[in-house]
Image (cartoon, rainbow, N blue to C red; front, side):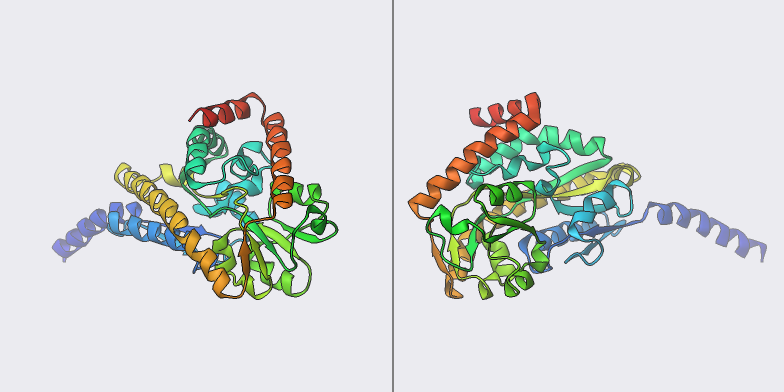
Length: 323
């Protein structure tokens, strides 16, 4: 009996470090399961589980099922959830740096967006670290283009319409084109269009297909205003609590997710635009009048952003333009 007790005690001693080493994380995102962004985040979680032999298990909560999109960043900061994914530009009012990827017509393609990300990443990582978070990876949506219920052939066609906004930049654009900005999250956009609460908006070809926005809108104008990025972050204390090998596995999986996500975004964009047309949308470049009008708005917003961001912001823009 004494020998059995000693055996059990030894087993318990050996099991204790293993149990302590195992961890589970929640990772909420505001996007639906079928979006390429969420699929990429899920692959990241699967890669971490495989690389750590199940020592770290990450549960992805898609479609704003755990936290709504505007709540996710705060939930990670405060430790309510260990990790999360959100669109960076939604927090541009908090700090202009979060909105650098959403300055209209600054970076209008994947190569340019990658250069801008490279220029801004050190400052972004520093800002997130000051808020108790670590950036794991960041992936852009395809270029933001113009959807509309009715044709938009002149700048006057925007006047008085209800334009969906999801961050300070889109709110500003709506104001500058003399539309009425209405804040609507992507998950609620289809219903808003169906009820007339929104009439036009800027979003990606991916969102148009994933959310079936072609069911309520008929016109898609390829303006590629900017490529906004989602960020997947982890609470710094949660990350620091991991052993070194698990930390390395998380970082490596994050790097792989970033490379995979950028490639997926680029590859899917052209396909999505073709699919929007197949589903009955008129897809075309904007008229010259609209293109020039939007470019003028872009120049104004670049200047405004630099003024708001100060010397640090100007340094990032200068570095980007030299690349």
